[in-house]
Length: 225
Image 1 (cartoon, rainbow, N blue to C red):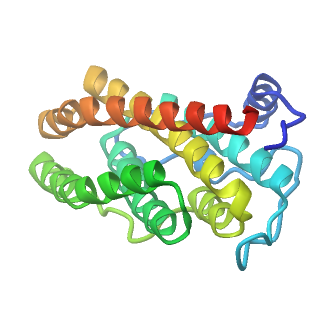
Image 2: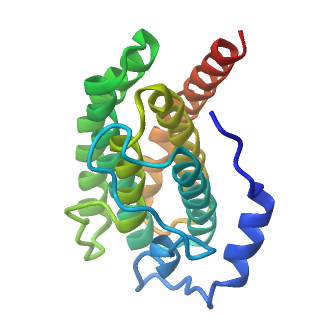
């Protein structure tokens, strides 16, 4: 897998400098950071099939998406913002796992994806129940946002050789983001029901992140052998 030219620290600084003020009031939804474009204006045409994407551009986009997601999670303090972000994460995870089961030849990747799907439905139902119990008028999104759509396109358009590492790296990034989101809401969230949901999901996310990191390490070891 190619090494990206721009380090994460540079991307982080570039994205931060481009941000406007972020609201933390409980009446707002997710911040506009979530839909921020690639920092240097670079974007590739959405993949239309395996191998249609540039591996270098896809890696840049995924790393930038990870930085944006981390910033977004750090600044998401509202119940509505948390619920929207958690719902989008769940939809993205399902879509990515479906693609992994269709495309990956790795038994480990496929086992990881099956576990994601096994937990996916319960997560969505528990989130909806927590939102209902919060008595805050929140409408959960019906589809993923532009950032996660781009990540899905990078999976769809990845070459066969790039797919497994692309999927594993995306799983590391998205679960790091979700871990921050959960931890912040557990600490400062206003709805007891949603805080309980976040606390209940935290161990699963921690384990999934560790599993994704092990997958990535195993793939790197294979590439270097």
